[in-house]
Image (cartoon, rainbow, N blue to C red):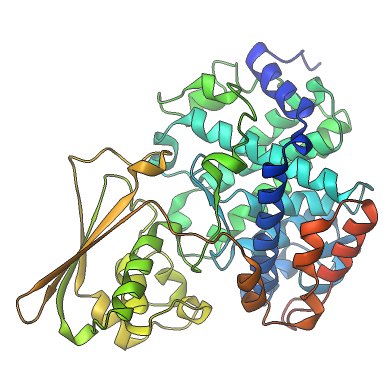
Length: 452
């Protein structure tokens, strides 16, 4: 028999199910932009060969009512959540959140869209539950501290299961007890290691977490038993994942005041590569505009605060997928080409003209600087360039670059295909169940022929 939830788990579950973000227009506005951004990434990601491989492997050819984004077929909701989560993250172009230290939207929205195959609810309710799921995921990230990520866990996967389960519990108006069980079932499925960065398994983490969160909520709603004290148990979530760095007050303190989607807020990516490489990307593009040429450079040094390049696990990539996690390559491509495109990061071998400059770059850490944390003020990079003529250039970037409006990104990512042209305006204004059905129909169109 499942016991009543323990105090901390109960308070967290209560915060989730009782939330009403629809009263906060700023949160709703940001959420709509984030959904547009995610759909841009997912439609583009549906064209990736590996999305088709995954769809076949997980049985997305089985009958069902859930849509596959960018594909004119429907399938089982659990399979759809995996494939759509993967498609949204496969290009590493989707948003990030500092408190999560990962990618919340590519997990939460696919789970909610899959639920739309089973339940009728309004577009406005979907937006609200997305905000709540992100809040839960971010609060868990803050409560774990920095060691969870730095030890080797990929927070998109480990926290995503819980964020997706929380979003669905909110949307289905689950009870506090049922929500606590759903969260416990999600917690027992929390997994994902950063060692997969640069491999197909990395974006699989997003799909895996979306499916696990959806399944956890469905199991709890069906009366399936599980521990209801995942935050309180002495061998619970934090004792396993926090490594002594937990801060439990962050779980519910000032919940929704402001919403995490508003502050510190999401970063909508301007470049299709790992977020930690974006500052050097912006500096490289700026230097290209200033007229600096690769042949004039003798040596490049990137200086980071401790921990800031933990995700940048590749120095000399062999292909574009590995290159997403290489600041050396990202800077070289940005400087030489003056822009970063999706084709810089495909599965093809890296261009010799780019890797030649990347090999002249190295990294160091400023050990006197504060260790990078969820506080954006701890993030910076300094680029020192030694020129062949003996002179030097230094540039610094604090924080992260990002987009304020993903509309043009959506057009580019979808190839300006007219079939998807109405999606951004619809997402900005959708409220009713009919609006959501219209969105699903627009998404349920072919973006490529390689998706099975």
